[in-house]
Picture 1 (cartoon, one colour):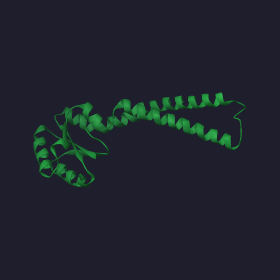
Picture 2 (cartoon, rainbow, N blue to C red; picture 1 turned 90 degrees about the vertical axis):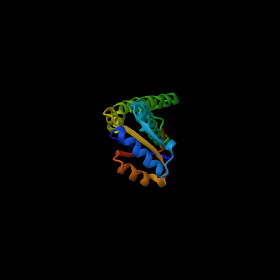
Picture 3 (cartoon, rainbow, N blue to C red; picture 1 turned 30 degrees about the horizontal axis):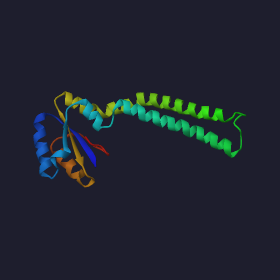
Amino acid sequence: MQSMIGLLSDDSAVHPAVERLQSSGVAQERIHLLSDQASINKLLQCDPACMIKNYAFWGAAIGIGTYAIFGLAAALCQCDLMHYGQEYGIGTIVGAILVGAFVGGIIGLFVGVAESEKDSHLYVQGVRFGGRVISVQVRDEEVERVRQILTMENVHGLKIIQGAGV
């Protein structure tokens, strides 16, 4: 199941949109109205701490991958990596993980959080100016029908979020 999210310009547009969705067969429990930033960020999966954690994880994975390439090359040519023992190899991989996680976290802080803020900006600002965010959990076969209904109800910024739920 996925979620379709959009912005209703004001509270007077909420009731007709919800009624029209329900009359087309969308169950009440699959329609959610959001009016606070935390709920919107949760739905959009753009929590800053989560973004930093994800980038740190991928940075650590890249650190391991980089070390693994050099380690594999050394093993294939039966080199002993400048006459250092296994302790050096273990220290190097731990260092690669830490440096990768640190660099990934920094990238997540600047790039990932900025992207997530840009993603949620329309919805958060719309709510601040009196609008409401509508989220509808839809199945694959319902996507186009729900999109048409929400478009006819003047819902702005329609977006589909894979695997999301409120």
